Image 1 (spheres, rainbow over the protein chains, first blue to last red):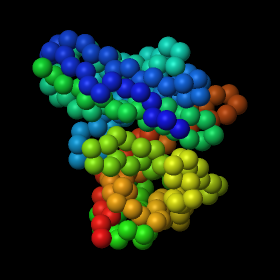
Image 2 (cartoon, rainbow over the protein chains, first blue to last red; image 1 turned 90 degrees about the vertical axis):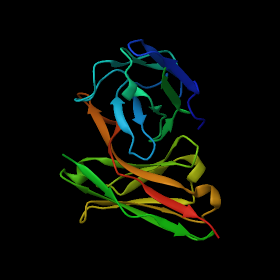
Image 3 (cartoon, chains in turn cyan, green; image 1 turned 30 degrees about the horizontal axis):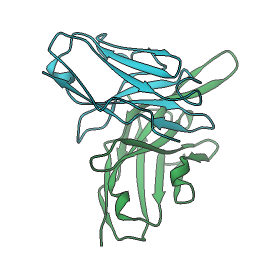
Image 4 (cartoon, chains in turn purple, green; image 1 turned 60 degrees about the horizontal axis):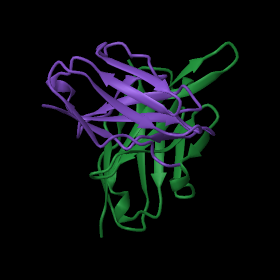
Amino acid sequence: QSALTQPRSVSGSPGQSVTISCTGTSSDVGGYDSVSWYQHHPGQAPKLMIFDVSKRPSGVPDRFSGSKSGNTASLTISGLQAEDETDYYCCSYAGTYTWVFGTGTKVAVL
Amino acid sequence: QVQLVQSGAEVKKPGSSVKVSCKASGGTFSDHTFTWVRQAPGQGLEWMGRVIPIFGKASYAQKFQGRVTITADESTSTAYMELNSLRSEDTAVYYCARVGFYCTSTSCYDSWFDPWGQGTLVTVSS
């Protein structure tokens, strides 16, 4: 099980939009609609931001949205805010009751 | 509101074992699967395995097969992760999380991880 591929970092100015890609294979991202995204501030527990590709848990701002095309899932943060600066991870079901995380992306707010 | 509380930090010698607990409160323990994820210093999140309490069945990432055992005790609403033959590379923060699921007309499917425990630092050092 290889980690899903994410860009090491993305950046944007306050108010702009950034998109984080998460590339896997037909055995994980492309094969299931069980892709989720987590925001992770160092020293804290990860926080669920998106589940089942594009669904948003209650309490998560609608600035966060998810999508998927083929073997690549994406997380878009619209109207970037300073508090969004941290690490983000995608995660996908990979069959046979296993999951795989992405390599992680650091979002910087310029 | 479900809350997961993990056991405290551990310092272990290489070659030894560690067992981390994750106690759930505020929900129905047996209705869900529980999973374990770790993050080594400077590294990303890494999925380790999961357990279904009502069946006691576990599945593991290939990397940890044979070295990790994940169990659950329904009577105390607690999940456990035991890692054997510890080496310095196992130094990490270990997290438990409850697995969310969706259902179709015929089946239910485990999907996302929420909520998470606060994390347990395991340090492996001679």
